[in-house]
Length: 249
Ligand SMILES: [Fe+2]
Image 1: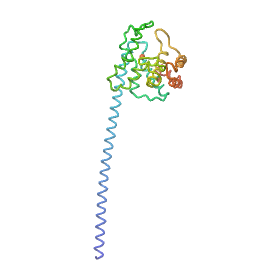
Image 2: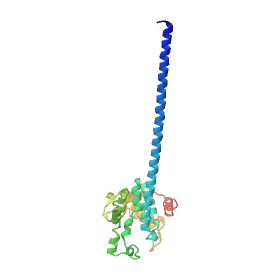
Image 3: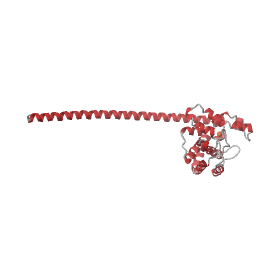
Image 4: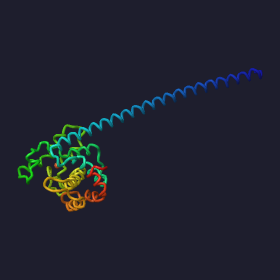
């Protein structure tokens, strides 16, 4: 082959390789732009989903608080009790290394929802309750968990509602569960509930100082309360509990 023809053949090959390379680069760039568009679409979908989930959770929380406030509205002395006791419960759970999911937190807020079924004459009786009255009063955990029975998003909350008056020594109600048979969230909550009861003014007695409440709770470790939960409660600084009590958090 003459040298001129060989040179032109090589040029053609280079030109066709270059053309192929250009085409491949264009295709790669198109694919990259497509992938970027997919990624942007996915990010947008995730963002919308997150917003929707947050809105849903806010609605759930508002519904739960409305229900708890409806119960509390009957008893002016326990104003904000549900929110305070939920905050104590969360803090003590954190100190005890117990994971509290949002459903369980709803259980803290709704623990006494069953009191809607307790007559005013019993709920507000200034003197001690008779045996029959106490039995009616002690039905509130079961009534409460029955109320929540068909609410799917409150499934886990029922454990706290049903078992918040069980005792570590098995002498509580309604199921007389003992020790670790009592769901851990209910064991944590029992301490929070007593803390709030002791540090709140009642018609028949003034609020205790926090130091006194700590002594009382300590004296009940191993009988009414899970000792490890009481030990975790001891680790929560006074200032944090005071901030919850006074609503400054
Ligand atoms: Fe209760």
